Image 1 (cartoon, rainbow, N blue to C red):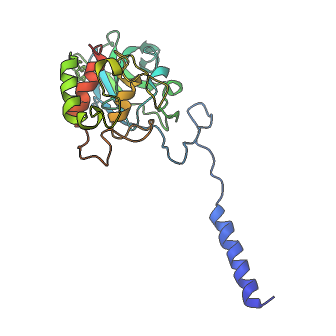
Image 2 (tube, rainbow, N blue to C red; image 1 turned 30 degrees about the horizontal axis):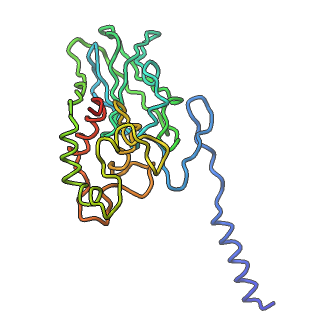
Image 3 (cartoon, helix red, strand yellow; image 1 turned 45 degrees about the horizontal axis):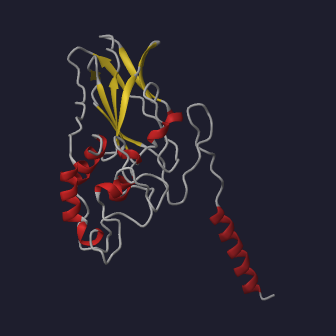
Length: 258
């Protein structure tokens, strides 16, 4: 064999071997169990912020936790997804998921003891993204309970009626969905509320439950589980729905889709 060919083949083999790399040790959870790595087109579930972010907290606080992706709300249980712990004292809370903001709102069920320091403890077994990916790391913020400490304001759901949503759909979606030539779902009340989606096995609108309503999945720009892209589609002349428009539809569903 020509010496130059032999050298080239040897160098290529070394290059290919170096490209394979060395297997990295798996990431482990707090119990030492390996975390299941996300798929090629997925990413780890992560906490982006915890509010309030002060060293002190109110005696009956509301805490907001923002994630980088929607969580699987069907895995979440009020009493143990997040607790505030202080030397054996454990305070649980009620939770609600704000799909429009990717935020978990936690409201304490009882008062904290003034002067005690509490650590926020997340139950990683309850937290998965809607694609099934585990929480990469769990923050552990600590707070001192004080009478005038900060707290997030609980978000009140606006009571929205169908007439408001219908007007929005007519203005933003009607040119296609209510044009008989397109033969699309006209997005009328009867074809949305309690109706099954044709693309996936779920409801288009499930009253009181935006997180499990496929209509919400279709209009949120970065929702990771849906078919055929966001609505309005990027090829249409319509701009994406604004945060206020998305909030209107979310509040309509959460207030009962009346």
